Length: 293
Image (cartoon, rainbow, N blue to C red; front, top):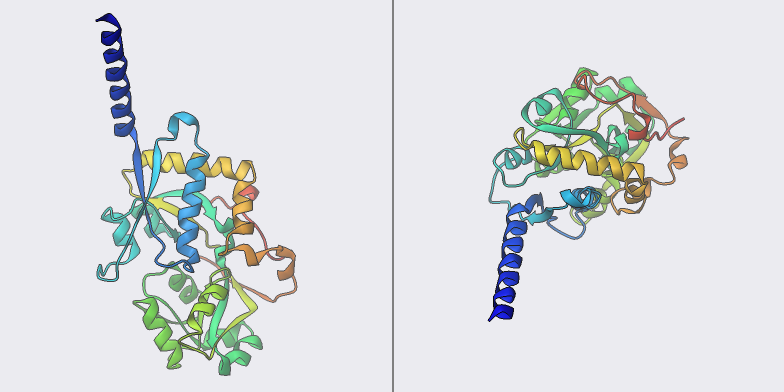
């Protein structure tokens, strides 16, 4: 009887261990890419997966859970995060966002989000390519109604039409109610490739490039300190061992930015960002990449 009893104790102990492990697992809900070509959504999943993989063994009880967000749920992504549809998302930062959510203050995309190219109709290419800053300010542009970019551009004297939804921006651009639609330097090309099927006369302007300091951060809910600390640690480790730079160089969203030297002969228009939060780590060179000398 004793061997059977020992076997029972072993099985019981293993079951308790398995139960404890299962209870300790933290599922981190991340927005699932809606399609294979949605590179920005894929980058979020891939970056968070990388950071979690860098955690010490005792903190690896985090698992990614990709959550589908359907068009029937008519909320913006801030609302999705606030209401717990997912646990982490990235946004271009602002004082308002940092008061509403908990930021991981390491710039995603190495701070390159502040470099803006423009989607235009082909007939308007010359308007932007030959424009100086004052001429650009006179041209109506479209941006999201609650995007932090809109505040920055308005502060710098641009004629901003605030639009409630991305799809409406495209329709306004097509109807020439606005002349250009600034996008992040790594967003413009892949977005244009998708839009060409519906808007054959859309084109991309990457000279001049509008620049303002505008880091994108991962954000979690205010009370989710555990996840914020884990992502901070994983991100720092990925920076230190070079794996985050590798992600940037190889990911379909950002790989065409490299080599960075190809941007040095472009014309840059520099703007002020008055809403840049005070705690932005501008003095940490490990966090930022530059496109121009």
